Length: 369
Image 1 (cartoon, rainbow, N blue to C red):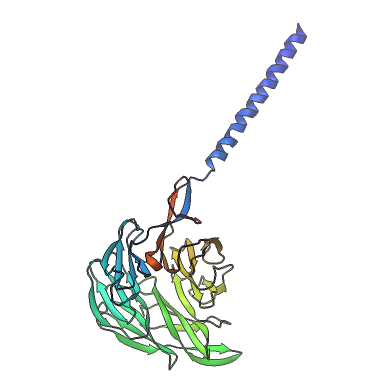
Image 2 (cartoon, helix red, strand yellow):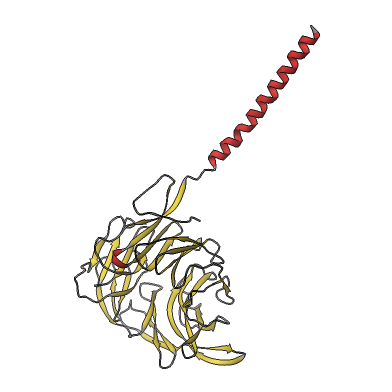
């Protein structure tokens, strides 16, 4: 009888241990299930319906954007590209001048520059008026307020830029002093001119410019300028040991930014341009870049076959095949979860974070922060 009781107790103990182990194992299965992704990042086609080349894009919010293109075309969307409205142009058979740059400060104040340097503006986000002409070589349109704006005027004969400033919304412009800097070239001190092509302000007081400082026929060092007094004065320097100009500049704070050189190299800074470090594995040569509030940086190469992503301020990139149907001309990210790229034949793609089971025709897989 005692043996039977002991055997019964032993069976109950073993059964209890097994039940306890099963109970402990259950949370592990639940944790595995909870770890499955619920969302994914994609590029989704939302094209304009007519065959017009789109050259530039600017957004005043995650889903409120304007696109500038050929035939004096200005497109507007308030729903992230689901629908497009032609505020100007939009006719593939039109003969109007092509638009090269567009900039929006907010949902009402915007400016566009044509290929022949005519400037137009809107103060309500929908109706446009011509303001006048800019210098023929002007590049890098940027406004830090509805009244104050900047654009560089490059003089190739003197290898110097003159920064043009407006304080009346773009109606009249005043030229500043020529851009110049001191640099060491091959171990020798040199006084160099600089030709700037991109401007960006992160606050009304703090701004940056990027371009090149010619050192020999066909060779330029990367040149960089910054202001901390609203553009009243600028300090300029070069990125050491570079042999190509800066094509585009992207800052997301007063200290953190990235520049793209004409060679395809990218350099990042965390101290407002005092020091620069080359990025690892940037996308293929001659890319377009955009930053989503510094949380991610995205570069798409102009052939549209590769898109690179960085989630650490440009220190390194991971690239994914894109296989866009045509060349990309511009890209922008109003925040880390919304982005747009535009190109030839009315091409527009939007970047979105969507449910994991979401599908749409022509969508391309992307990376998320």
